[in-house]
Image 1 (cartoon, one colour):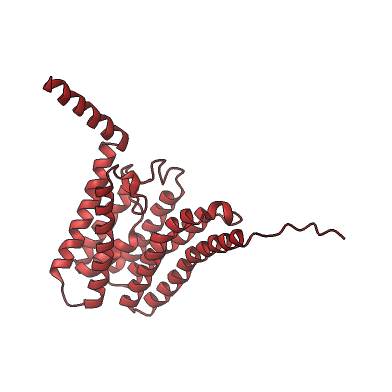
Image 2 (tube, helix red, strand yellow):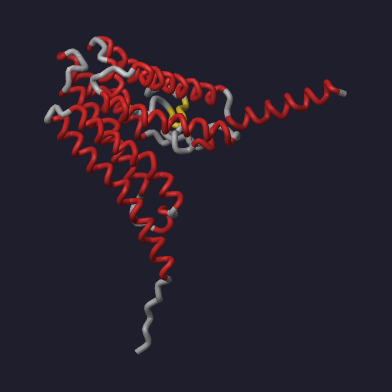
Length: 265
């Protein structure tokens, strides 16, 4: 009897295994989220932040890995974008909202209302059809609530100030400002040096955040200043790219060059 099965190329099999492995890496973020919730429930704040940081690391690399190993075509039975969004909503919204409920960062009467408002606003942000724009930016404040909670935990501001900050950020979810997508820096600038510099600063931000956790509660003023400076740079670069899109910047540069050449004649 003739064998109708199609032989599988070893290299193709290896590629598919790698592609499916990327989905597994993405899905591991759900485990970190669950463990984070348990650590928060136990009031083990530092462990919770380490687990939240691990989830951020997974989210930071899985998109690059998915493109590198062609997950969309080789493991297409799983919708990687949907998987990523589900886990991101858990780790970037639910986990930090639960942290706000369980900790003393907010006034007692505002803990549940503000946590609920965060989940409500973020539901809108995640479900917008253009939440991630065609030129690979986030539209509106991109629900970085885990990072916000991390800053508030380190700064130890008055709970009323924390509540004000969170309320302002909830409003910014609906303001259509474009924010840089940290893993798609090719849309930040056409200059490789600027992209590499931003990537390097982002990695340093991660290292600095880890260092603050390791040294907590001992103050590390220089590292804290760097983290704040990076935050200002990120927001400033996002607003600049909103005002001057990448294509227009190139056109303006060409026009300026043509004008200079004309003046030299």
